[in-house]
Every structure is written in structure tokens, then in C-alpha cells.
Amino acid sequence: MTECGDLLTQIIDIQTRRAKFQDGANALITLHERGTVSKKELDNSLRVWYIIENELRGEVTELYDIAYKKKCFDEKLNESR
Image 1: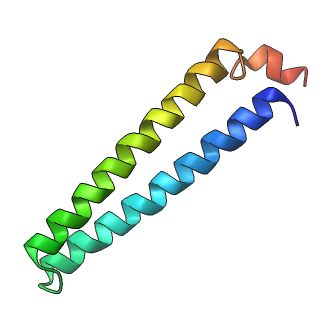
Image 2 (image 1 turned 135 degrees about the horizontal axis):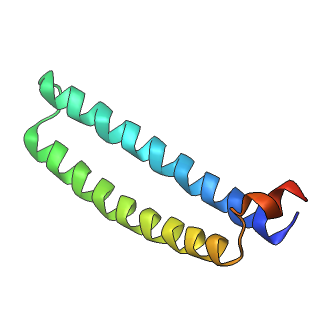
Image 3 (image 1 turned 60 degrees about the vertical axis):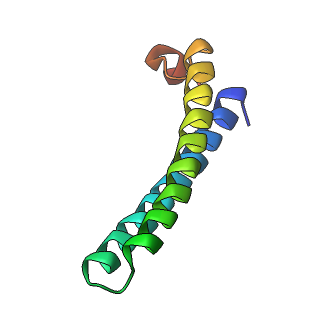
């Protein structure tokens, strides 16, 4: 796989993980609204989600920056691959 291919694979992996964590947070909010999860449990869980989300966002931002510097998103370059 090319360097750009590796970067894009890592980006997709992290974005997929972020989406799964977001789905989990949304499910917890729904459970809280239904009275199944207490405010304290929700707050504790969302605190963990926030920490993980920030870490993943930082990682993926770095990968995007590298990919842009390497012109991985340049349409003309990608058409020739």
C-alpha cells in the first residue's frame, strides 16, 4: 500500500472509532432521558467519552495534516494512481 493509502486507512479507522464512541454516548443520553441511567452515571460516562474523543480528534487531525502535506487529497495526483 502507498504512504497515502496507509494514512487514509488510519484516518478511516479513527473516524470509525469516533463514530462508534459517539453512538455510545448518544445511547447513554437516550437512556438517561428514559430514566434508566442516572445523571451521575451519564456525567461519568460522558467525561470518559470526552477524553477519548479529544485524543482521537487530535490523532486524526495530525494524520489529515500529514496527508495534506503529502498531497494525498490532490485530485490530479490521485487520478494518476
